[in-house]
Length: 265
Ligand SMILES: NC(=O)c1ccc[n+]([C@@H]2O[C@H](COP(=O)([O-])OP(=O)(O)OC[C@H]3O[C@@H](n4cnc5c(N)ncnc54)[C@H](OP(=O)(O)O)[C@@H]3O)[C@@H](O)[C@H]2O)c1
Image (cartoon, rainbow, N blue to C red; front, top):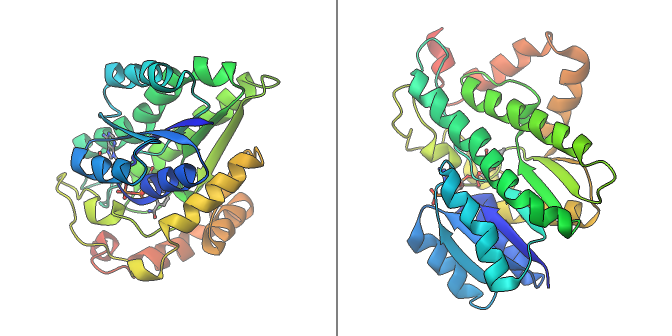
């Protein structure tokens, strides 16, 4: 029986991945801040999922999870640093507080959980999975703080993977493309309020369940990178060769979003 710690398990990709792992017989410590959502999730696999209410920005709270894993299951094989938030506002308008908050959750939150889990993961030659984004390979307009946080996470994971060369630990960087979830309705505006409505047709996006299945398969194959959706893979690939020339196309894509802050420029 394998044991995982999934952050951001109360909705979207994290919830789907927790269910995917439980279906495959794994035990999961499912972390998030919304207790009610975690309890509903845990109730569907009462012997396998333990809810853990905690903010990934809280280093001390994160340090408790490996102890909990040891206590309840005697081991920890995988950590999936998935908790994340987004924002949508231009650099010249966004408050520094919003940029700091995005960095605190997406980068420092991931660092807290990965550092806390690392000793146990090494013992078991397990998995460290970081949920990044296409925005971690190509900066996206009106998502400067989000892009920066995911670029930082990619660099951290690449360095860690190299440090762990030969250790048997798999470090997997996942870049989902646009995925149906709550992330866009909760994305922060320039002042830090949630934008409340997604500007995208969520029903047409890749489902969180399909993303979770792909992540699980990539874990089993011990892959280093997983870049999802055709649009996402194309963006990463083109950016490698045509960096500056892509600005126009990406601008034109994002300016068409309903309520795009780019329309004001
Ligand atoms: N959906 C996409 O299109 C997309 C694309 C690329 C990458 N991603 C990445 O995928 C990951 C999951 O996002 P999602 O799309 O599934 O969004 P989501 O449905 O909004 O889920 C985000 C999760 O993160 C948790 N979270 C947020 N802040 C937290 C904090 N301070 N401490 C602990 N947990 C926190 C939320 O739970 P609580 O509110 O209960 O704390 C929630 O469970 C993120 O890292 C995101 O950047 C998503």
